[in-house]
Length: 297
Image (tube, rainbow, N blue to C red; front, side):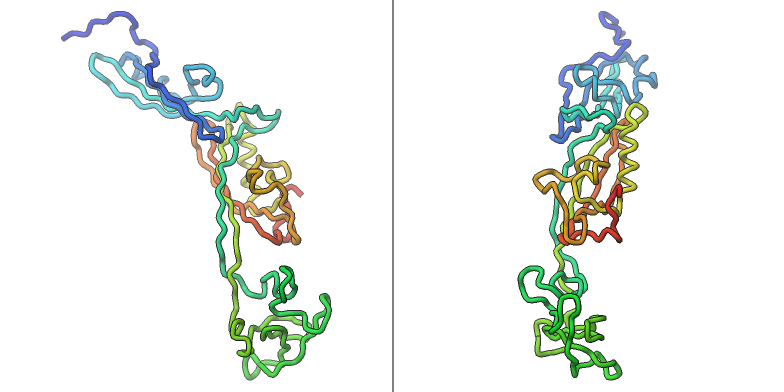
């Protein structure tokens, strides 16, 4: 049966009912639209370009086509399925700031094996309990330990004993040799302890490209921030909020800033929309600034 053309010649895409949009709760919008089009026009490469605005307001201001597929039906009609991606948090960014979603963050607390002498209570009673190795009869700045009859091996020099069978190479401490006294069975031979480690994993999406150079700059800045510490959620204002307020807003420890940007991964998610996955490590004492400098300082 021959095709009879009547009405709309379908020379341009006609939106079909049933199109969808959705928001992930953090500002990332995705959607799908289906169009009918004459097959002769549906083979034009322009119909498959990325970056075409969504056909319906107000989504046309912040969502653009990202992926297109076509099926060619009978009677010379084609069906186009187009995916759209965009960012809209409901709040316009300040001038010069990138368009970025709110962080989607998860956290985990685990334990890892660390040398016992790195324990925060090894010398001092940080947690209001007796220190592990103690300060002997000396002061906090000048510990003095008594000589011991124990030796690490027959040829080792004289050692000096602290609390719980801890032994050192010098009267003032020096190198920690180990727990050598079997009189303290809960410490004897112990070389490590399980240290709690807190880690945060987060994901944000940012709008970049020629029209949004701030987004490209953000990607580059996050790359540069890996290995640096921070005492706030924004790394001294150089980055967007990476940790939600309910996790805390101030991160100052005794040794330094408590947040460390441990890793950053990047991925093209849509047209000029970048997915940034990152991990943060949290330290109760803080990260020593001489080793992990404060970002931007």
